[in-house]
Image (cartoon, rainbow over all chains, first blue to last red; front, side):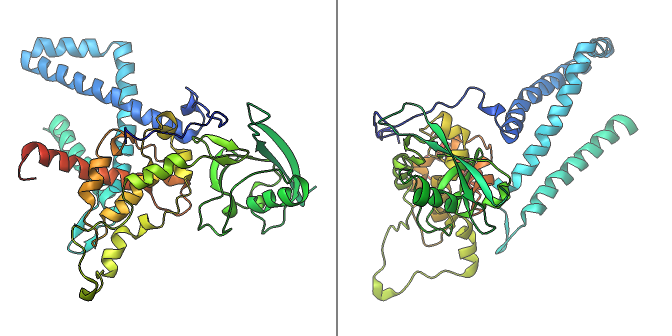
Length: 137
Length: 246
């Protein structure tokens, strides 16, 4: 596409620039920006998980130190906000998945609803396994 | 006046003004009148200089797309009474250069459409004596949704990515490429992939999803692009791991 000019130039045509704040113009645009922004919090959660794994490997003292650090109000607040964004990220991702994933069984197409629900089911199973590992065992 | 509604119509006369202005007109508002009827009323009875595109009046030609109260709409399928008591603000489609009043330049979209080869591509055309290329109803269903596109460009007007980066090939062109890729008679998918598997193609899309919301024909261009991304990613992986065999 690079060799094709984007527009025929005409001095009298009116071109308007998109506002820097275009994402505040519509609710759906704002929801999109929140969804995209949620990836920063996902990155933080991954980093926090790595910190947790490192502390566990280093032993009891390091683990207790990390727990004490995590109890600080600003870390707690960051983790609560990150958790909410993580849920937003997961829900929007699962809702989007059926649009990209088209699965056929034989000649029949698997309904979009079923693909979406299977994501939620996998989430539920993974959560149950982690719940069992952490709290029951 | 309950049986009338006010239309605020954007005017841009390039020989006289550098910024658009709005003209206000009262038009009748019977139950069966659409926005386009209101514009035609203005043109026929109040101000013959108003310029806008329209043709079929039945949601097929895709000419009468405009911004109605901030939303991209086909004016032939948007009823005045749904906006009562008004007023209604009618502007040209966003993200396109305005030529005059409600008319925008569509040259950019037309070039992009051609670039994705929206027609059946065959490596080898069989002779007519061999008969038609057959297709089952299931095979038709694979692409039928994407074939409903009428090139009205409402999706381009709704897409902030296209507004920010006019090089982005855009929702309708990609959905139409997908319409032919999924057609079992077509063999041009790899040629289209060359055009679309790049930043200005499918990867420019960040899945805002507005294109699908405003589509008057329920084509779901956003879905088409996400599917295409999956195919594009698989193709790139194949080319990376099997440079000769892919």
